[in-house]
Image 1 (spheres, rainbow, N blue to C red):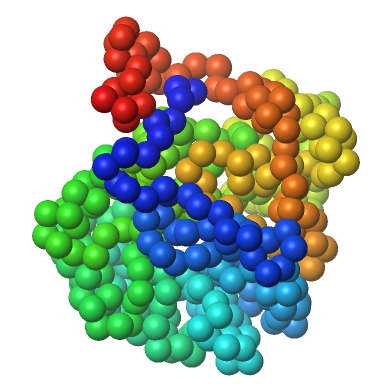
Image 2 (image 1 turned 120 degrees about the vertical axis):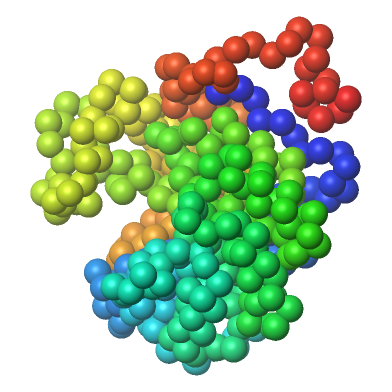
Length: 363
């Protein structure tokens, strides 16, 4: 992959600043160019109320809080709204101001033509429904779940600006955007004086490094925080997969009907990454899952990987990704093993000779 440019000096603030927390091991980082401090791990609540029952979900939330975590991500479509409901009932037992709650809008939540997308009506209906389920009067981070090609971006962004001004939403972000879509949204907000996007939630793992081509450079140049989803890539980086396997474990996500993950990832490139991941984990006296998350935590521009724990044991393993560091040599080995064999055009073209300082934001 080409090197990710450091953030432009014109921005004035660093995208990623780590602060020591009062809990050993867990650090806080500023979310993008804001003053909002979030824990370096974000707890994903996607399975709460569906694959993970409420009692287990509550235990996971309690443990995450005790470990120093304050950042929780959900969405209106997770468990058909049950994820937000479970989280909302838990929040009632806690001091609301201590938690950064992120949720999302745009995925279909019903059969009607306006039960999806990023039009003004669906966003306004969606935020009120999420607030009811969460049992709160504000959402810390409200995110577009996916791009909506049918709605003018100006309509979407102006609506989010209205929500921030009303107090229902504190910050706004996006998920699953392309590079040009993210940059266009940033530019429109700047032009109209609307509330800026402060975060992006992309897929980024040792097996999926496409975000380095455009998304991460845009985020670093524009002061946008990065909250990565699926850091273990549906279990591929958990240690459950090894070279020589001919099929996924029978109880895994990859084995579920409709999953095309095995066809996509069961190849020599993946086995090479998993070989190196296992070797580094052994050297670090750690687990493959922890090393995979640790690699993300040490990548430029990343604010917080989202750890989606289905069980309390999964959470215990993933919390072990904080409080230590991979060595530069171990990072280099993982970088090299996961380097894509071929870059797409025009990323495969070498930069113009003699222009490296300008490309790095120093010209």
